[in-house]
Image (tube, rainbow, N blue to C red; front, side, top):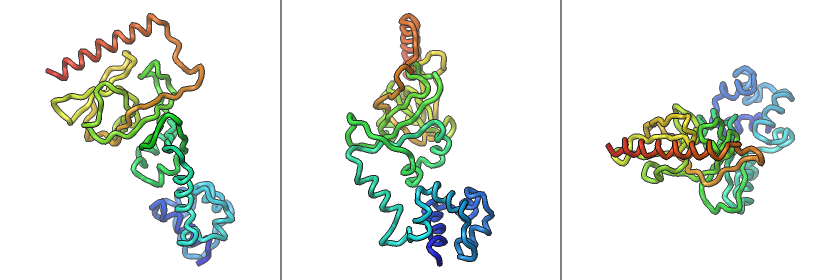
Length: 251
């Protein structure tokens, strides 16, 4: 088998894609991809360019290097280089445009490794992730801000009335304050800091991931411009909301 044909098959299997799935991504028929992998046809230049962009590997490497060999395992070397160069914990960044893909790939190691990363000097070792948020439900944290979080495993680790990025099968990625019902572990209440948004309950079985917020990153001048009176009204209303919810949870 020629090197390029072997590499196409190797890269496809690294993503656990079927021939049909890979062919769909390349915009070609499955039978043509099969012909490439079985060395019955040579991939065209535009196909090589697509694969090069998709896997971040040069066309020259596709044509000349056996990416899957033990001596020259391209993806493994890239993974080790990324891990070895990190002096601090790498923080994977999930932008709004990647939110839909994250719901499908949050548990896929290959997908997570392809996310852009950054580090923050104030954070030590740990499992961190950063999410760009949209909407005004958590004002004064504005739409477009990035919430840096650490992973929380399960109901027991949730701190009452703290802010979290909550990943659910129904709501997707949301940034909310969590209230726990100490009488049951089956449900949590998500509360917005903006009183114009009503609290709502979420079943724990719907929760895919929980990330407790550690830092908020926003662009200079992006902060919401609110009067002191409006902010005071907001805080007062929020306190009333929290008190009412706590009372309901105890009943």
